[in-house]
Amino acid sequence: MALLRRQSKTMPLYSKTEEADFSIGVWKTEEDLVFFETLFQGHPDILNERRRLQWFASRHLANIMLGRADAIMNDDTGKPIFKTAAINISISHSVRFAAVMLSKHHAVGIDVEAISPKIERVAHKFLQPEELDAISAEEKLTKLILYWSAKESLFKLYGWGGVEFRTQLLIEPFTLQQSGVLNADIITPHLPLKDLRIHYRFFEDHVLTYVAL
Image (cartoon, rainbow, N blue to C red; front, side, top):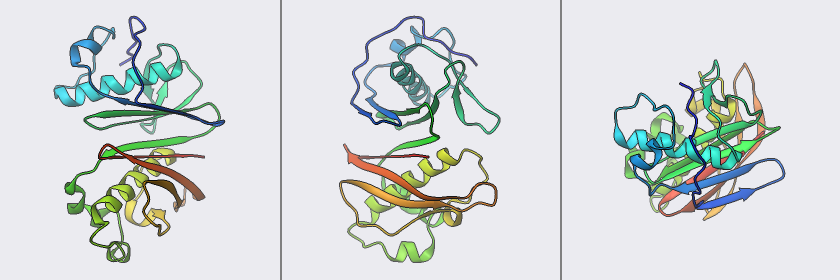
């Protein structure tokens, strides 16, 4: 569904990063559904109110970052694209935050995740046994959520789907910090990508990761 904003509204950014090759916006979701529903001509077919709010927040932030209203579609692989703007985009959202990454010349991937113990139950699906064994008990929750978020960003950068997170999205061992850079590879027959650098930072019980190619 092509959705456009009816009018421009000022929205405070939680943070904004401007680099030569890309820009990143993070916004703390504090408005309610009514705020967004009055801005858009069409509404998504999403019944869950929390997910509906996240959808609106990320699209509204994308328009703020772009500087004008534009609809967001999906290409043949399911990757988000602007309807008219020739700008690469990646989108992510949690309950409390939305994040958008834009670049004119580079493929991008971004992810924002709330730190939650639930990640421990599925860690074996995205990390190999030796990687899990190398994580100390003190850092377990934080490192697991960082690994997951980083691999989500890699997956979005890759954009073709059909990737096995545990064996094809590989991150080199790292020392955990408040913010930093992870070295990573995407190992697939279709489009192998080497020596990728994933930036990350922790904030308000969340982690933000992003990567550009």
